[in-house]
Image 1 (cartoon, rainbow, N blue to C red):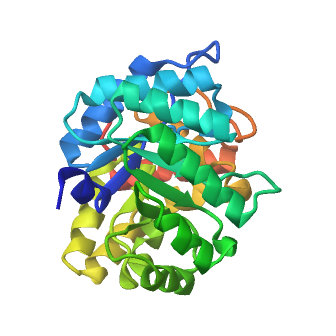
Image 2 (image 1 turned 180 degrees about the vertical axis):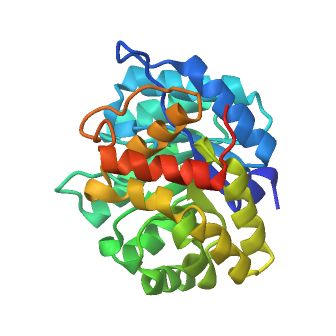
Image 3 (image 1 turned 90 degrees about the vertical axis):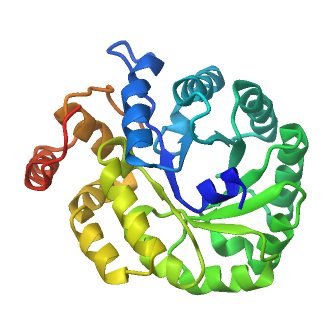
Length: 300
């Protein structure tokens, strides 16, 4: 396994984008999060993912955040740069991410309501050309494009794997069997969905928890890597409340929960931008505080 391939089968930690009180990005605040994640053993970090509020950033901000992540990581572990939105934006950010030092790109599935499967295939081809040799990880949140289209996407030169972010385990198994064995399949629904996705062949998982409790994410990955599903289930149960809070309000508290936890742990990274919810409701905050106290999460 190459260093990148091995990292992709580990934990893909999705970094938050910090803001100051004036709603400006505050890249320096990302530094302590990166340091803690690397020290804990997180395998690869992701700039401009959904927990990084990719769709809430301007293109200039997205460029700055991938540059910032590269500076903080400084080559110690691989960096995955998220790209997406219009095809021209995606290609522009692909080039900028490569120039910043990203080791690979994560291609967000276009949320365009008129996105056709064959249009998505052409989209990825153009991004692959712009990436100029950087490997691509496809981030699939909608498997309705069909197994045939997924197989065609995976056959595009430069596509190294897929972050599978739908709970359709049978469709994942079908997609794995329909594509080249060299494709890396990563669980894209964080820790709670990692065991069932592992069961059909995915390896590794994405995580927003790494921003606040990377040690738990690493422990869950280690348990799954050795095939100890019972230990993994026990570890996941201990952080499930956190993920439940993040999944509320149509997943609109996903980033909110992470940033509220960071603030409670002594590292205020600001608010979550609309259309995410901000702040947590009083009831949500009480549950989060009880989780932090009960699990004795380390402060920054």
